[in-house]
Image 1 (tube, rainbow, N blue to C red):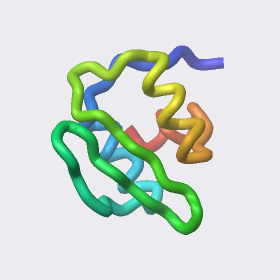
Image 2 (cartoon, rainbow, N blue to C red):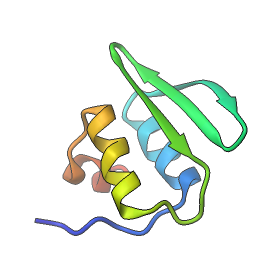
Image 3 (cartoon, one colour):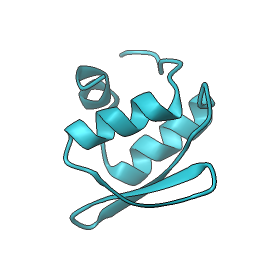
Length: 71
């Protein structure tokens, strides 16, 4: 099992974009993305807290391995 990496919000958005998520809107430092029924809010922090990244991946329905593959 892999450990959660320390990544920025921009890298997270780029990775989710490669997996088919599109940016719907941005409000302040938070970007709202959507793919089919799954929607996720990504903060534009550098770096994102590991607990927040875990929550983002759970909201997106993406496994850690899939996320790391698209980084």
